[in-house]
Length: 79
Image (cartoon, rainbow, N blue to C red; front, side):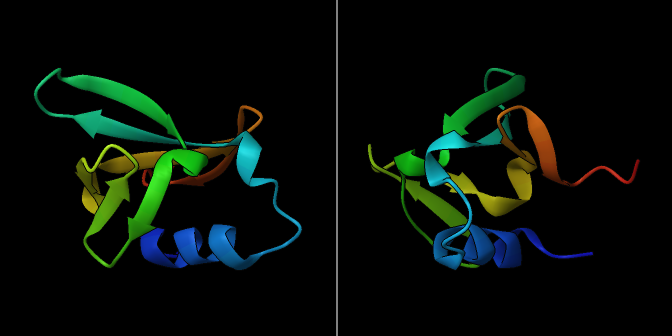
């Protein structure tokens, strides 16, 4: 299975992927639900965090899915 960090690299550098259509779905432990953000809202990332344009950090282990035009590209779930 490809890691979330490897998949983020793929999105970042693959010219064939439309970054405008990619959404990341992550678990917010304060709101206790899945939230969605666009890949274009990501300012930077490393092996532990996404750094968003509003300087909020999202831990990579909280990302549950990556979708493009509602099509599942990557999932933490095993099904």
